[in-house]
Length: 76
Image (cartoon, rainbow, N blue to C red; front, side, top):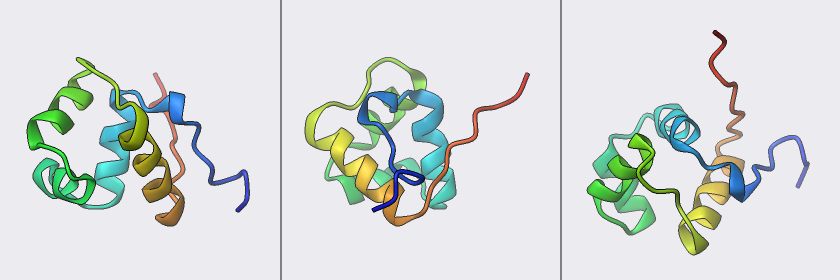
């Protein structure tokens, strides 16, 4: 596994989660189903109300690696 595609679990902020979901072309509901969580949870993550922890964070990292997701922050 190359470090180029590795995503640090602590980096799952609202923008990165939304960018990953869009990269995967999923709705919030579809992403929630894949992660085994509620659509409301995905919405709360994307609004910055909460951040994924534990298994959810790990799953996001695994999904991102498999999808070759590279996060490019928005430029001002």
